Length: 119
Image (cartoon, rainbow, N blue to C red; front, side):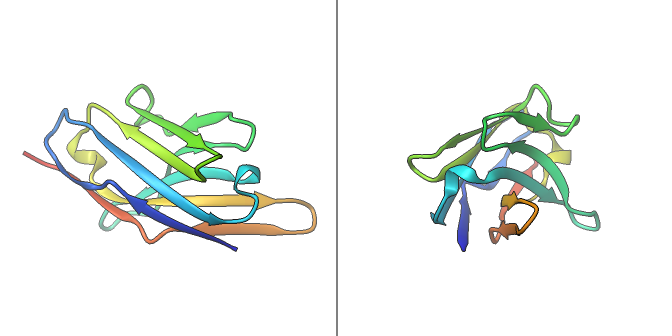
């Protein structure tokens, strides 16, 4: 079992920056792929960025070059540095931990943190 708690959201002006944090508790954090997703009002939840247990990363096209995902396995934490924020980045951002094999599949979510980009 993994519990995830996000923090760092808030109101920021266009062009500004925010850093989201996700603190995890539970076992085997380093074996999980960690991701950030977001959901805007009236839209489906979408992948923003993901980092595998091996350190590989992938980003949504809309955030490439502006957002950076990182993780600290010793602290059981994952971060999302968001720069050059745009109004269309406004959403609830969720932290996700995922791990699977042929015998099991684990998928955990945090409660979300609101990010609002507005002047």
